[in-house]
Image 1 (cartoon, rainbow, N blue to C red):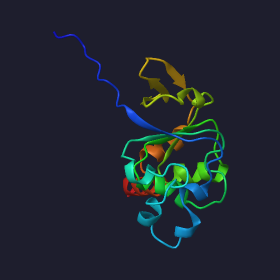
Image 2: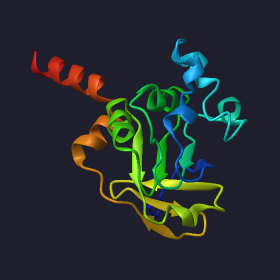
Image 3: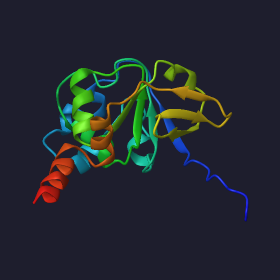
Image 4: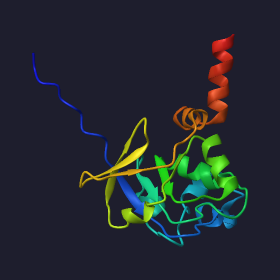
Length: 170
């Protein structure tokens, strides 16, 4: 019998942002008359000019307090889903953004110690506890995410979840 091997967790590249990133930085108002593809090309352009051009599927945003404050525009969360962002990690979120994100399938992790990730370039998301693993081996715990929100984020959002439930019930 061979020794049991544990697969290495997938490592996610981190994009760092500060406090009070508003919905206009994520989905600039000047482009709201366009579709998500155009809006995506301008996501965070005033804070991280290379973001929309260089973000890859599976990347993670680590931000400061009040991520997603501002308007109720759901495109602010939709653009991150469109660009393939795996999760946002921050100490707190704007309330409307928080709900929109999960409804659209974007995982938000609330981590009081997110500022400890300032110099990290990568991290792994550990499930089911949803803690963060750093390359140093250190773990940071996030606030628990209710199961129904976790299922929505993992299942592609509220509409995809409801469609699956309707098909299963038929």
